[in-house]
Length: 252
Figure (tube, rainbow, N blue to C red):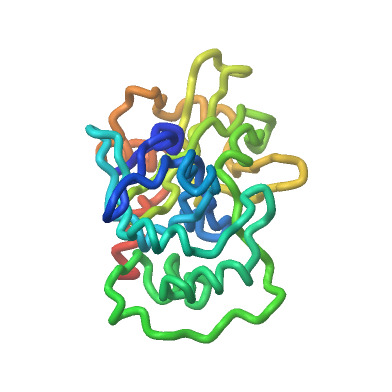
C-alpha cells in the first residue's frame, strides 16, 4: 500500500500491550531511499521521550482506523536505547539498537535490506554478515528535514519537495511529491528517487535529469489521486522508465 508520510504523522502507535504514542517523522537511508526508522513521539508516556521504531517491528498500517501496529511491548520500548532526535543517528547507535532487538544490520549486504531486496521478518533467514568498517559515511536523513528541498530540472528549478510516498509493505520511498506552485500554480507531480542524479544536502537541492517541459507534461498528482498500478504505469511510461516493481521482481 502506498501512503503519504504526512498522512501517517499523528497516527497512534499500537504496541502488543497498549498505546505508545504517535508517529512523528521518519529517518530514511539516502542510498536506497528506504525508511529505516519511524520516530515515535511518546507524549506523556516516557516523559515525551522520542524513540525509534524499525520497520522490522511494524505490523502494518490501518488507514481506515488511522493506526500503526507495532510488534513490541511497552517494556521493550521503554528499555530500548535512547537517542536524541535533534542529533545525527550514529552507526554506533544503530549497532547497539540492532543488538538490543536482535535485528540484522541493513547495511551489510548488496540489497535494500542487506541480504534481501525486501524486508524479511523471518529471523531464521537473517543470519550474519560482515560488518561495515568503522567510520563509514552515515546516510540517514529526516523526512522533516528534506521537506522543502528545491527540485532542479536540467533547465531550471521546478518546485520543492512537499511530501513522500511510502510503500508500507517494503518501506521504500517510492516517490517524492513535488509542489510546483511557483511555476505551475497548484500543480503537483511525482518523482521517483531512482531518477535523482544528485542531492546537495548543504544547498538543500535535488537535481533531476529531466527537462522542465517533460515534467510539465507528466500526469498530475493531487492529494485525492489514487495511486493505482495503472497510474504508476502511465507515469513511468511518460518518462520512458521501467517500473520499480520490475526491478524488484528480478532480485527476489
